[in-house]
Length: 378
Image 1 (cartoon, rainbow, N blue to C red):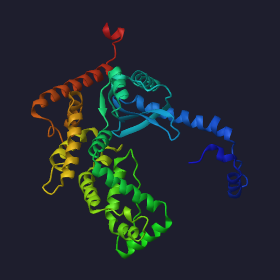
Image 2: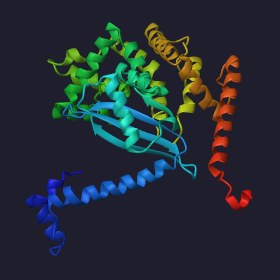
Image 3: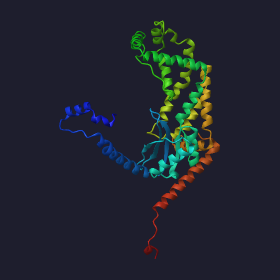
């Protein structure tokens, strides 16, 4: 996507003139003052009609910074349409230069809902990260909060990486990636080594600090290409010290064995095309029973990583309010029902669901009730 001032650049004008000499390109002012505002109003009107038809909804909110470090507050709504489609709309991304205190965030979120005429009592919950200021904001507003599973998992994994052996092995990985990224000669030598060793013609992956999955993919790629790495770097006297030692490889393999199976769960629980809240309890159960369960051939480091992740997730999702919400969601999912609810909590879950259903039925009957006319009374 190009900025609107592109329409005033000579190269763009020449291109359009070549395509169609009869066409006159509108000015930048037209796009900024007329076309874009008109498009915005049209889009907002359409979205407003859709969200007003939602009987109930949930939201997602996040405070984030742009590349130029400008702070923004985003709000996304999720609801089921009348024709049973799951819809998700990012309603707004607002510049938020104020201090990020719980009180100001709470008011900012209230204002965001109000600007779309959304009733707070219709909101089932709001999914956020675990920032203390955001948690306080939802407490102030007395809104049900659901911790973002992806964010929780990221924090759990970051905690499991606090080990000097891991620090060293990851440091070696990053240096290897940097060497091949910054030298075309090394890239050429790598391609030749891959061909000789019959390895996939893959390039290395750079880690994104806020995405644990990118680190895991970086590790997997280094392990995949370790023979080619050794062949290329061993031939360079200045960089042969970067060849991973057997201890480094053992650490990387231990990390990969623990974290590799978790990648698909992050993707599955981040989708917007299907309801994901009902997956959380089943996924946590699967983590405990299979995915992160200790295996006989696990190294001590693999066991340590798995246990750290499990301890954190189990603790954070044990809160009564969160467990109740997740229990209701999984019960309503016909694939799971009560399979992942403890027996002592099933009566309370069923009682809550019955009360909710009766409330909805009573409200529907009230909305369809019309007062009798004077003639009908007489």
